[in-house]
Length: 89
Image 1: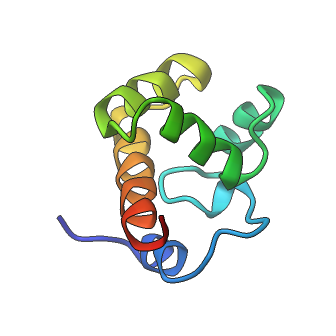
Image 2 (image 1 turned 90 degrees about the horizontal axis):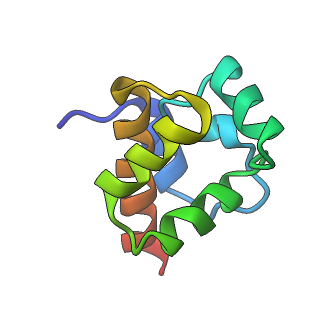
């Protein structure tokens, strides 16, 4: 699977206070929807990903349910979080 520049940039460094829109697949519209749900930082999405035991499929389904993300949006986001965990946890 080819990764985007956004994906590579995210995985290459600690998360810090990055906005949720720093994750691949999360643009301004989806980011606004997530922010309304209380997920304005990438670290908060990471927390949900960890609660779902780093299962990319479950996280993608959760993302679809919470904010109406499409499979095209959810898959790169969940894969990026998985790779970030592999690198930093």
